[in-house]
Length: 210
Image (cartoon, rainbow, N blue to C red; front, side):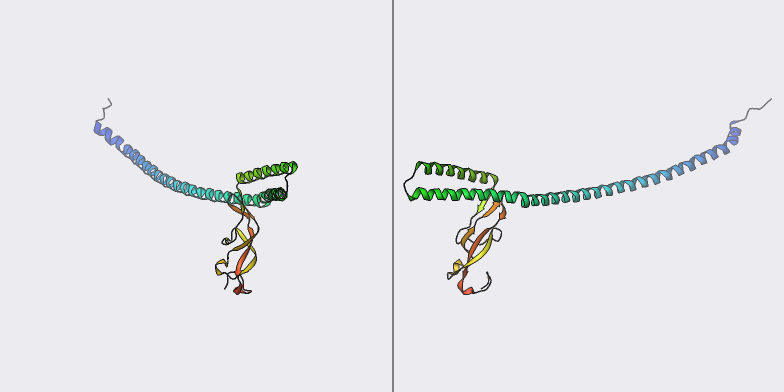
């Protein structure tokens, strides 16, 4: 009859195999642990790469936005220079013509008896002048009209001649307005042309030098 093995005998029989299995499992766990560490390192590196790429993307977007702003600024400048400026210049010139017509009619009114035709014409021109001034003011168009004695502003005035003076306090100030300038929403489109006082003792020296 076959004898029943004792627990100790069973342990002696299966222990070597169990130890080998446990050793194999342990080695596999160490391998998995190493792979897990490597994956964590790769994930950390990828995270840093993504963060760096995000920073580069933000910088690129900022540069793109700056380029778009500069492009829009340049396009607006060209539009104002080639389209808006001449159009405003023409509108202002028409308003000036209306003002001159108004002055002529006023001279006729003041020169003698007023006729009904002159009065009707004068009233129509007065109304047109008022409308033109209101429209220009609404658009933000201003005339640059410096007066005698005003200081020179290089941004708003262009010197086109000199008038000699013996009064030192007048030296360097405006003597006469030649043509009015134009400003649109605070930007000078055409500076006013002016004559400037200069001390007689300055001779032929350039303006601003004693």
